Amino acid sequence: MTNIFVGNLDQTVTEGQLWCLFARHGIVESSTIVLDRDTGHSRGFAFIEMSEVGDAQAAVMSLDGTFLNGRSLRVNEARPKLVPDFVHRSIGNRDHRHHRI
Image: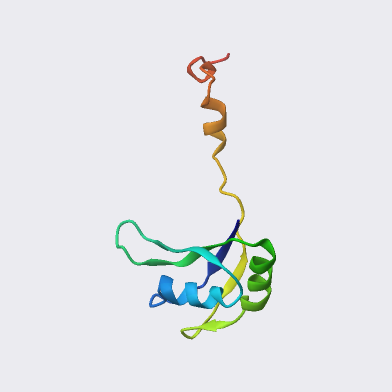
């Protein structure tokens, strides 16, 4: 499974439009436009999951820079979500409660 980042989306783009655009290159497992939690409006980017790595790579190469609803898309393989350093230090470790002098 490959996760693809799609940026510079117009506010009017739908998950269905993205699904159809990427489905031309292979099987799309999911299409998710990221919404602002306060307004419910698109934050201008989305994530597409595709089953086959080769199909996902072909989609990235083919669709990066193409226009959708008047905007040039930025398409690349999504980077893994970063976990803040403080989470790593606190998991299974209670030393965070003791101040070292």
